[in-house]
Image 1 (cartoon, one colour):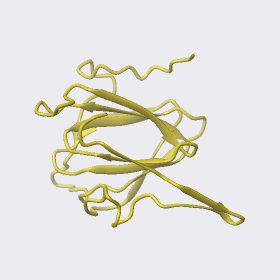
Image 2: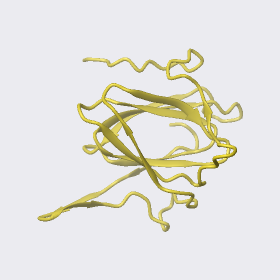
Image 3: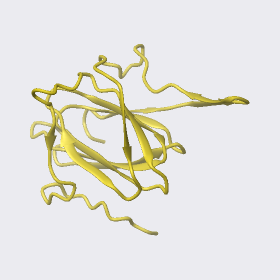
Image 4: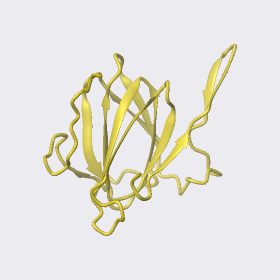
Length: 151
């Protein structure tokens, strides 16, 4: 697994009224600090990738639908430099990812419905100087193929 990447299994607590799922608590081992909370959505078969941050850590969970999460360690001084990780998360496999600075990440909605992702970065978005560095979803410098693989 990519050095510094943390994954928290999320517990769904259902009852007769519905369900509850905690995503991130200030007393979690992986909690660093609070910047803001926002949601982003992704439509079926759409890829939202690649980007990384120099300052902030992204903490995100998919709360509706299913996404294919991919990460690429671009940090030259990392013991896992060049490593790719892939996961499938969502309503049937709830997890929260804590992605450290310098790690490219993105996802593809692989379900049949719009995916909703909650993101809790450690820094508020800086409109004047965004801490966001992007590559195209199919940039050849990242050796990852978003193509659906049937078994």
